[in-house]
Image 1 (tube, one colour):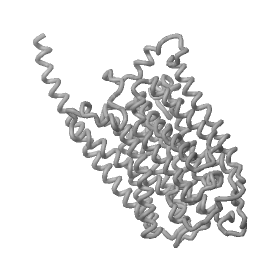
Image 2 (image 1 turned 45 degrees about the vertical axis):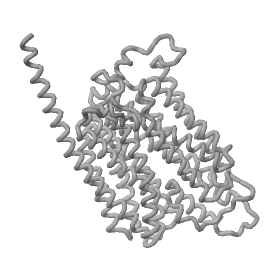
Image 3 (image 1 turned 60 degrees about the vertical axis):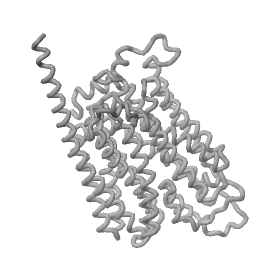
Length: 496
């Protein structure tokens, strides 16, 4: 059997909650991937310059980070968590529907800020709730959760592609400019697919801002709004199933309420926003290893998610630059291959996380990332190996986030702020490392793109080895503490 009876029984017990959390991550993936392919059509719709439209990326990424930071505030009760998920998934559908009506870049940035905030809250709450439900068995379900992100990220560009402009979507007076040729527009679209991080490489393009707007991208957003609508409906159905709606005839079921408590009876398990995690009252009497584990886990995901963001953002730029000088159409496939490999890797990791422990999976994954990055450096003139390396890198790095999240929470016995800290650190790394790598490429050349990834992967692996060492110290301290407690209680038992 692929799964033993215990895991299957756990899933059967919690399948309504589990499927709902998986569906909201599909909504997360759907929203995170649409902006890159549609950005030129949105530029036409808002009649803005390339420099102006990239602020939309900044708005989305910054508020995603804000949402991740404060998402834990909604986890006090199951009702507040599900209500937040319902509102956030509904906001994403509304943003999809409203985007075609945003004819100014400021309005579009506000819409994307709302979507980013909703995505950040979804990211934190869905991870928190799955860890809370399954605890020591959460690894396999977290792998599935992040698989649905990749699935949504694959669906979104497929929906948008038929409605993208193949030529200039703002018809100016002079139609002879080379900037509006299909070849240049394809190059721009592929370059901007990395969340606008490579703006300096396209700043020499001049596109029309005044003229007649001809774009059909509105239909793509309305279709995505309809595709996403079942997700808030699923959250609403779960709230009804848990008897959390005002129209419910009775209070929440006792069995379900108890299932959301930790073994110690603590309903909050120490989780909250990043700011509430820093509450001195909660941090009193904590060992030094407790803080180091949070810091190391966050630092590892800062680096690995930063590698994902920077690789997806700049692999196209690297491929079309010397010495590869790959064709624009062929290079444009690299980003899609990378995300497809991540999705397939997370699907495979659902089974692997059941068969192997999180430390083993993380060791293999991080070593694989280092080897691939080193081989890419060695065979930097080979276009064929770039495709192969992109695929293997996606497979190796795909399981790091869910595996590390499950591993860190297990070390801390589900009493820390690991999920909130790790999710926020990952979002921060994805945003900041893109900017750092972009500036290095701009000053040192395209080869530094591979060098940055290799150095970052070595640092990430060293931090992971340090995490394993601190984990042993942390657990030995707790073992000694529990033995001392038992010895103190034994005389009392004898006296009685």
